[in-house]
Length: 384
Image 1 (cartoon, rainbow, N blue to C red):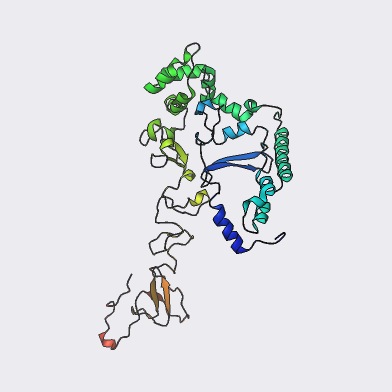
Image 2 (spheres, helix red, strand yellow):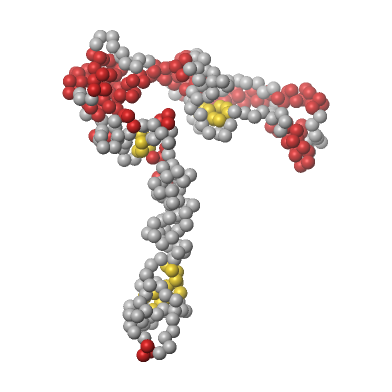
C-alpha cells in the first residue's frame, strides 16, 4: 500500500493491537521555544497538570540534594539544559524499518509509523537547530555559553539563594542599614522577631534561609517597613501574622495545604469554585465570590447580571413579566401591545403616539369591562 492512505478497518485493527503494547506514560517534560530563542520548561503529569516536582521513584536529579534529589519544575530543567536541547536519538523508526516484516501488523501501519516518526537524520538536524537557536539567544543576552551545568546562572542563583544568610545579606533583603536594623531591634516588640533576628549582631552569625522566609513578614511589620494594610492583626493570614492586600486572598488548607497561609493574587484561584475564572483574570466570571453567577447561570429579574453578559434584568430574563400599554390610565392594558420586561417602564414599546399623557405599561393580562358602572378606579391596580 505504498503511498496510499490506510483503510479505516486497518487503523481500527491497529488500535486494538497497539492497545496491548502502548506506552502508558506517567508524565513528562515539555520544552517550548520562545520567540527570543530561549526555552520554556514544564514538568507535567499524564493528564497535563503541572508538577512542582517529579516523582523520585521515576526520575532523579542527584545534584539537587536540597530537595532530596527530586527533579524540580523549572530549576532542574535549567540545570540539565544549560546548552539547550539535549540530543536524544529516536530509535523507533529505525527499529521498525529493520524489523517491519516481523511484526505482522495490518496493511497501512507502515505509513502511520513513517508519518509519526521522521527519519533519524531529520530528527537530529531539528534538535541541532533548536540547540543552536538557544545558544545564539544566550549569546545575544551577553551571558557566557561555555559553561557547565553548575555554572548555569538560574541554577547557580537558586543554589545561592538557599545558602544560610549572614548579616550583610539579611540587611540587603530587608533594605536596611546596620544602624537602622539595630534601632529596629531595640524598638521591636514581637518575641519571634527578637528570637530570630536578635542574634544576627553577633560576629559570624548566620540565619537559615527557610527561617528568614518564615519570619521576614513579621519583622517587616514589627520594624514598620511593611505596607501597613498588611500588618493589621484583625484578619491575619495563617501563622504569618500579616493580612493580605485588597487584591490578594489568603490560601487555606482547602485550597492548597502546602501553601496554607500565603497571600496570593485572586487570579491564582477560582474563589467561588464554579470552574470559571474571574473576568479580571481573563476569565468570564463577573462575580467570582458567588457560584450562582457566571456564564452558566440563567438570567432572572433580580437586579444582578446573572449570566455575565453585561446586561442586568434584560427583557428576555427567564421570569420577565408581560406588560401591556395602558393608554387611558384605567389600570387595564391593551392586549394588542404586549411587551416582556422585568419592571414597569413608562412608554416603552409604544406602537403609536396618540398624544395621551401618562402612557404606561401594566403587568396584567388584558381584561374587558362588561359595564362602565361596575368599574371602580383603582380596583384593578397594576401588579408589580
